[in-house]
Length: 408
Image 1 (tube, rainbow, N blue to C red):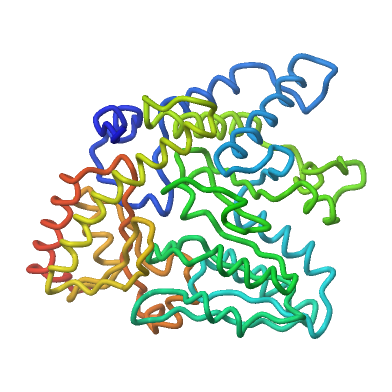
Image 2 (cartoon, one colour):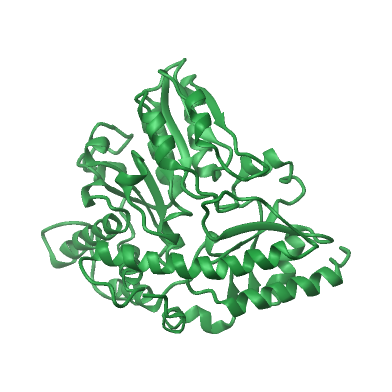
C-alpha cells in the first residue's frame, strides 16, 4: 500500500514546528510512539538486570525486546544483536577485538566511499598490528564503487573487508553481496556499515553477505543507540576486552556497562513504528517491517526523483554523482555560496540540511573538496513531501540570484 503522507507526518510531533527536514542522513525526527515508550519506561521503576525483583525483570525484558526488534528489522536473530551507544563505538569494539589477532603481513580492505566510522577503526587496528591497509576507490565520474576491483584487493592474507551499504554523502549503494562473496572466498570477514541504508528499504543480513552489519536507531526514527548484528557463533569466537565480573555470554560480553533501559524501549517502539508504515501489512513483525520499508522506499523514491530533477536542471548547482542504485541522498554546491553559508541561509529560511564532509572524510579528500567546505547534503525521508522539495528548489533559485553576503 502506498504511504499515506498525512497519516505518516501526523506521527511526528516535531514536524508541527514547520521546518522542512532534509537532514535525515544526520538523524531523523521522532514519532510520538517512540517518545511515549521512552517516557513510560522512565516512569516505571527499573533496576539493573536481575530476576530478583520486578524492576530488575523489567530491565531484562527491555533488553530482550530491543534485541528482538532489531533482529526483526535486519533479518538477524536476537542472540546475535549487540547493542551500544553508537555505530562508531560498536565498530571500534569489533576492530580492537579482531585486530588483536592480526599480525604483520595481514591485510584489511577499506573504501574511500565510506563514513570514517567504517574506515578509521580498521586503519588504526591495522596500524597497531602491523597489518597492511588496502583501499577500494570510487569512480569520481559515476560515483560508483566498482565491485570488480575487490578481486585485485583481497588475497590469502586479507583478514577483513569493510564497506558501506549506502554512502552517507551521495547515497551510492555498492554491490555489497558481490563484494562479500569475493572477500569470503579467501576467508576474509566482511563488516558492512548499514547506518545509511537500513532506513531506506528492507535489509536482510543473510542476503547482504555481511558477517557483521551495524545500524543506528536515530536514523530510523529511534533514539541515539546503535546495534551490530552477526551470527551468534561468529560473536562466540571473539574475546573482547571486558570487566572480569561482567557477563561472558553472547552477546552481553560485547556490551560494556549498564545500558540506557528507557532508550532501549524506544528502539523497540521505533521498529514497531516502521512495521506500521503500511497499515494493510499482515503477518509477523519482520514481514510488516519489510512491507513498511518497501512502501517507504517507493514513496521516498518519487519525492527524491523530484528533488534530483530540480537540482540537475539548475544551472548554478553542481551535483556530486551517485551510483545507479542509491539511497535518497544527494550532495551539491551552489555557485556563489560556500557550503556552510548555503546551509545557514537555508536554515534561516526553515530548511534543515547538512554541510561539510559529514564524516565522509576520505571521499571529500579524494575529490579535493574537503578543505573548501565539502558540500551541502539533502536526504529524503518518508515524512518529506513534494511541496517541501518545490519550496527548497525555489529557495535555491532565490539564493542563487542573491549570492552569499560577504563576511564581516
